[in-house]
Length: 189
Image (cartoon, helix red, strand yellow):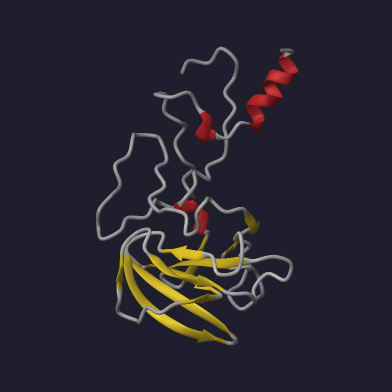
């Protein structure tokens, strides 16, 4: 392979594809810490990101619209991610253990919110659920079904996560979002 092609391949390789057993570069200082549920910290290999939640849809969904928070809380933006579903009626699972804190209609869509502890709350819409506020849920437990009404062209669910009063990118809890880092050729590992 030509050196320029090799360099391009390394630039496009995500950090999560590093060779097995070799730690990745530390996460940038501004990266949010991984979530813990119930005070337990997930087992982690030093220097390797270990997302602690699971996807709320199976199989792993396609992200139809990314997290795009507004620069000011009162401005418009996209305070979560839209995940494609195979069809309306798709089952939504709790991404982590928690307690249902809200089930109801917001504006014109059914919403379910789960408090995961440590100030973290997940909300899903439009999702119909038979659960009641106060219900305990386990990671992976069925919490409701997607109904039409959020994405105009295809079936989807909107997943938002708040840490306290701030919206955060839900994907950071299920994926390694750190940037890839290119090391000089011949650099010690």
